[in-house]
Image 1 (tube, rainbow, N blue to C red):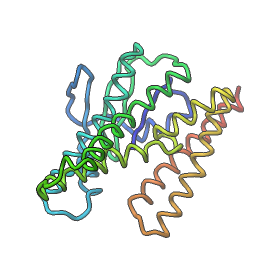
Image 2 (image 1 turned 90 degrees about the vertical axis):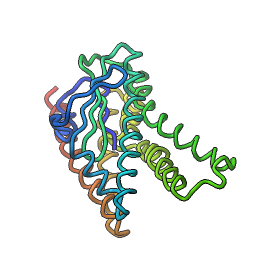
Image 3 (image 1 turned 120 degrees about the horizontal axis):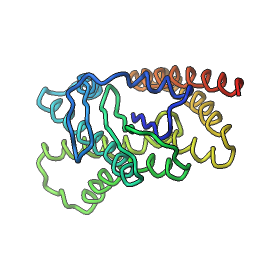
Image 4 (image 1 turned 30 degrees about the vertical axis):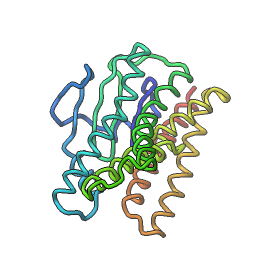
Length: 239
């Protein structure tokens, strides 16, 4: 899951920011971008990995770390290109790319930044898939095949899922930006309502299918979007 605040904070975005919280991990830098990794990132990555041998759990966590970081770097590099000053934070269930000095972006710029993250993951995972289909990994050891399977799922699988039109996923930001182009300020409100409907539907499906991690994620996203929707409605009524 990716939290990507590509516009100036407002009352409707506070719940998304509160989900991220304050950074508690060590402060690092990568390609000139400030980077903070919360301990919860490693714990949740470990838990999502399911029941595997300890060595493979370590490999899984490293693949998740590299995959999520690559995703956030996609946002950060495009943001820098647009004159922003990005920072990156990895936390439980995902990551965030934010800006030291936020400024107003056009809807097209917001879409470009939002697309950049999933595009990196899909490119990495897609390259692995194409190479595998071309037989480049024929005769690979079981260990390498295991790693490649993790890389494929984390990058291609999560990249596609992140394009769901649900805030605060990248697909939700893209949907909100597109809606804003046609509906103005009401577009983001409509995108928020769509996010609530979809997260409830995802949660109900996960409950019936016994997909407990998806159920937890759906519940978190539903609560986040309901809180943000209430705040945005209050702001709209006061203006």
